[in-house]
Amino acid sequence: MLYLASQPQTHPVLIRDIAQNLQISFSFLAKIAQTLTRRGLLTSQKGPGGGVALARPAEEITLLQVLEAINGLDLTWKCVLGMPGCSESGVHCPLHNHWKTIRNNIMSMLNNQSIAQWVEQLKATCPSELLTGAVGPEGALESLTKGKENHSGEPGYT
Image (cartoon, rainbow, N blue to C red; front, top):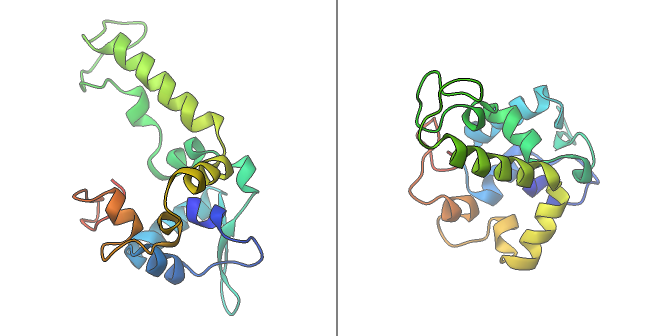
């Protein structure tokens, strides 16, 4: 989403081109794009001139919306220790109040800035290669997530 938000919004971008530029798995990215399209964050066009594009202006999309579309928000509302019954109204685990503060800060951060604002911050603080994929042999996202694997066992987001 940040990659798309950093590109001119004149025409759809091929998933294969995004995967190649960011040096991530095409099949993994295609699954993510399909999910984001079903959730209304991307549009998808088949055929010549096709590809994916943001469904709304980048200023109207938050990282929280992207996270929710891909993974849901269960992780942010479940007990950080995985204890059943730990809740606001019931018995609390030892980390409950600390996690609640951290969780609320994370949720606020992800919800209060648009992906357009995140792209501007990236441009101001990171090498431009992070948005274009021209970062060494391992690629942009791999350099940020080195050693981590996604659910498919391929390098990338976890």
